[in-house]
Image (cartoon, rainbow, N blue to C red; front, side, top):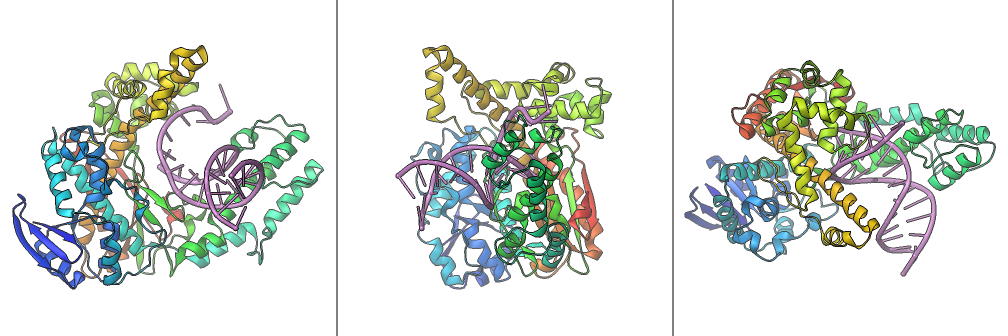
Length: 545
DNA sequence: TACCCCAGCGCG
DNA sequence: AAAGCGCGCTGGGGTA
């Protein structure tokens, strides 16, 4: 059963698309709660507009179709390029995701919710039917269907994660800041420790300057006789000079202050919860993005403030060596699959391709990112010899990108075509030697993008399936309101965090592992690729690794 | 004043 | 010696 929601109407359809009802809806949460017992798939234009209000009213749904996210995938996918949807002119459904208000009101009333859905709501039924038509005509409808289901589940999870929030102890965060920076400054002056470090820098160099300004800092270092091209820590870190140690410390603390200091906590932490905006599909490859608060960059330094509620635990799990395993599965490279029976990098060493675990890691990264220099590039030939199919897959993706072609993930998300500027650079290649090398450079660069796209994008699909499966399993572990049950509170590409009542933590850990196995089978079928997860049951995020 | 761009650094 | 992919955020510094 599908129930298409639009404004104050709900239109029902059987699984085969036969209309099965059309009713006016006055009390949306009550209506959804009642119909949810039939386990329908709710079809709506945008999960961000419909679901927060429902959750706030205590209504959780099992499944949905997010037409906005699905549209973006179908529009771009090679698998649906011939569909009416993909051939149509860009319209309302192609609007950029920035449609959502910067800081939406925390609790929309029902009236506000529906009013805010109004101006961006074209004919949802027509759009849904167009999407079904496109998927049905795809070469592998099941794969694309899985992708759309996973993407839509991700949309639900993103809203739920914001609703539940990441448990964050502001007082502990403050203690942590004070320990390294000193007391919170009253005005805009530097915290004591930064002031002290700045004094030290000035004393060592022998003249006044502002270390917060990259321009001044570069000048200062040169004036002191250091030959540097930039002030980045990887360059100056290699220099032997008394100013370097305090300078790196200054940079580290300065970063902490500006990115995750008191002001950050005031803006983003409320009621013991960090609630950033997660943006499913926000990255071209299908990864999530986040906006506000830098949720996906939460530094290890402040993770100690992420603490479970009393009587609760954090179950933190990450997929070990996800991208190399995805490459093995994608390519069906038997040797690489076998290398992944345990620690993948050890397995690669055991295969004889490289000498050390470190080399295995660097070589695999190089293969997936397209390294051209250094150790990583030098290791490529032996890697290619040991794992020909895997390396051929990424090389083919790179060559396709260099020709300006489009590549796709396992489930059918396709890369964007290079833009008009790229085309212009390529067509000018014959004009001069400089133009040719420029065109070549740009082509190679795009090739590195498409090379990585197939792996990163397929890994994102795996992670979505993992999380979607886990979400369902968590719901079934307990009864009660959403936040009373174990629920996902954080997601970081290949890592998830569940906030769970302590007595359920072990059960959660088992579900996490089971969901990972499911995800591998769903996407890659019977192929014996393992996707092990390492799980920690902790009170503090800092103890997870 | 209101932007835009860049360097730098955090995360995977 | 941090190169090769994908992001977001901040402050400085420039331009309109």
